[in-house]
Image 1 (cartoon, rainbow, N blue to C red):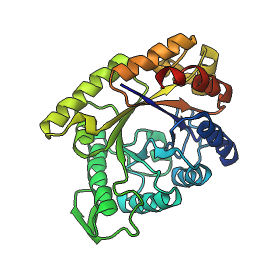
Image 2: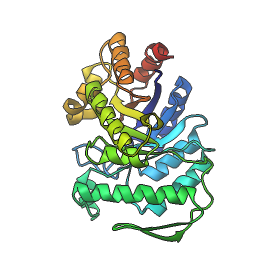
Image 3: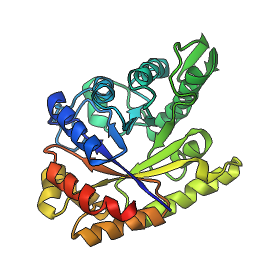
Image 4: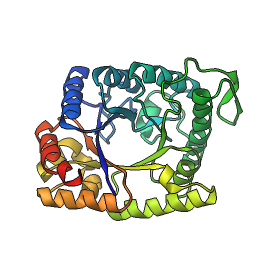
Length: 301
């Protein structure tokens, strides 16, 4: 079983100029995926408001690259009406010549919701918003007209034109919840992503996803399975990127010797990962990424 490699580039404490340089480097190194996140504040416990906006950054990514898939991990279903997001992604797919993948999630960073006066309901409501949102977006991106009546979103004979370049722009569901999120992935998604779980946890969640696929009579192999993991060759690099989140993400981190990193990537592959996506935060470790491309990726060619 093969595995593909990508890089998830955080948008906090950085600039578009720095990101453009990083994205070019990633593409030159042979990675096949680059993604951005969707936050208004830094995605940690610092409370820092320094984070570039997602759709604008996604646009810059699409315009700055020529080959890689331009993904999102993940847009929050509670930040924008699904029609706004669908139209943005359709246009982005034209800008990128058909290289966009749309990741969707339920949202989790309550501090930024509170700061901007956005409603942050309990998880069941946010997951219901996600379920309705993915149906609305799928309809808008694929059907001539879409009508949808839900508790949170409504479409009436709605159109999204022009359609994306891709006949079916991939929609991924992000998150690891084993009662609802994985059910939604099985029912609606082309792909699934989960961050910061170790190989054993990832294997268990792959099994849960397969069980939900069985309930809806779907082949689990039709869903692209991916994991986001930090790359930090030593503990100093991990602490520099993730600060007080380091203890939480350490079990999933690719770290140690080259062989140890190869073995861990292999463990994710054996657990069912189609993609291993390296999660980078500023200050970006370009040399560490180059080492990964030179010493680890060839082991899976």
